[in-house]
Length: 480
Image 1 (cartoon, rainbow, N blue to C red):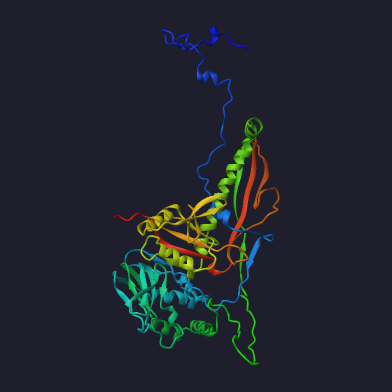
Image 2 (cartoon, helix red, strand yellow):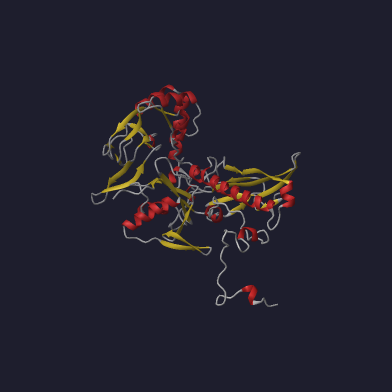
C-alpha cells in the first residue's frame, strides 16, 4: 500500500521538520525507537586471545597411558648445565652448592657436605672490559664460573686473524673440561667483552679434596674413564663399524646400548571451575547461549595458559629444558643475521623460530642496517616473516627480562625427525576438544551450576638438538 505524500512529505514540496518553539521533539527519538528494535550483537570479545602459533605448529602425540617415555641411546658425554648463585651485595656472592652438580664432572654426585665445602672455596674476582683471562696453549690452573658479564672465546685463524668461536655468559663455566687430563692446556683464549664478575677455584684446591674425600675421588675417576670410552660426534656410545676395507678382515662386533634411565613425561594440566547461575542459563539464551559463550572464553583462556606453560614451565617448558649445549648468546646484544644463522646451523630441518614480537622487530632493525630484506613463508594461508626459508612466528609468551632482553627459540618438530612433540590424550570423558574436557559438577544450594574445565598436555624434546635457544637478545633500540 502506498503512503500518501501528505504523510511522507517531499524534499521539493515541504520544508524539513523543525523542533517546536518550546524545544519538544516533533518525531520519535532513537532511544525510544530502540525499545521496539532488535539490536545486532557481537559475541563477547577477548583481547588476550593470540595466534598461538606454537600450539598450531607442534605435532601432537596421543598419550593413552598418561605418560610418555623418551628412549635414547646411552649418552657417555654428559651435557653442561648452569651453576646458580646467591648474592647479598656486591662482594657477598656465593655458589649454591647443589647446583655444582650441573658441572659434567660432578653430575650425579650426592654428598651435600662435600659440595657445600667446595662451593665455599670459590673466590670472587672482578674483571674489566677487554681483560684477557687466559691465552690458548697456557696451562689450565683454575676453573671459572661466570656470575655476570659477557666473555668471548677466540683463537688464531689459519691466516693469523682472530676468530671468535663462542660467547660465555651468566651461569656458564670454563675449565672443568680439564678434569682427568694430566697436563691440561687451554684450547682457546677468553677475553672479557664487558665488565664482569667470576667465581674462581684453583685446581690445587680440587686436588686437595680428591686426596681427602674418597667418594669424590672415585666419582671423578669414573667420570674420567667414561670420557675415555669411544663415542660418536654426539657423545653417544659408539657402535664399531668398518668401511673401505678390502679382502676378508675380521669385523668388529658391537651393539647399540640404551639409556637405562630414560626420561618420562607425565601429562600436566590446567584447570578451572566455570560457574553459571541457573537463572542466567535458563532465561538469557537468546540470541546467544550464555553458557556456551562463558565456556568459549574460558577455553580460550586455558589454551593461552597452555601455550605459556609449554614455553615457561620448569619441568617441561622449552626455555628451561633446552639442552645447554644448544644455547648460544648474541655476540653484540641485538639479534643479528649472524646470530640467527648460527642458531639455524645447530640442527637439521629447523621447522620454525619462535620470538617475542619485540625481538622480531629488533631483528628486522638489524636487517635494515645491513640492507637485507627477510623473506616470507606461507603457512596455512598466512604470510609470516621468515629467515632462510624458516618461518618466524610471534610468541608473546616468551618473557622479556628486567634488563630488556628476551630469547629466540628454534625447533625441529615431529617424531619422525626426532624433534619436539606436543603430548595430549584424546577420548577423555565428556571431551569438548582434543585433550580438553568439560565435566558437570552439579548445582549448589545457591542455584549456581558448576563445570570443571581441564586441559591435559605436555611437551617432549626427543633429542637434545631438536630445540635451540638464542639468549640475551637485546630488544631495545640503540641510540644512533
